[in-house]
Image (cartoon, rainbow, N blue to C red; front, side, top):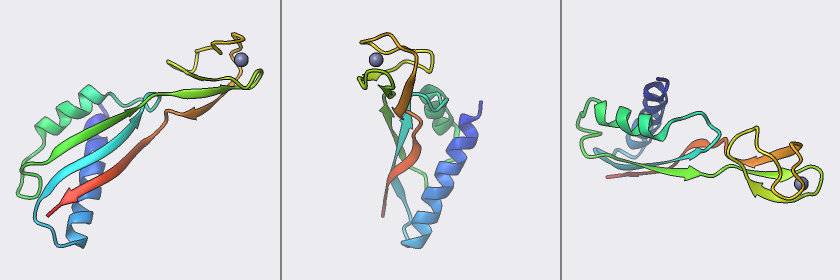
Length: 113
Ligand SMILES: [Zn+2]
């Protein structure tokens, strides 16, 4: 379960941010996770429930924004949503495509006070 490790990194980012602005509480952390990023949202949410609730993260909500995976066909230029890298173009059925989005894993916003 590498989500615990990922969460640790996310919390570190939030902690540094809070320190920088002399904040005492982190209210919300919003992260963006792409469908192809190999991160289980359920596991990440579970990891969040298990963290040690120190003062800084006492009431922190982890908001997860799921980004669907999209690709552009290299044959017919059609843009479509993909399930995984074994998907095929919904128009011409080609397997030759370029991934446009879906690999995201980043912190979008941190709300502190
Ligand atoms: Zn196509």
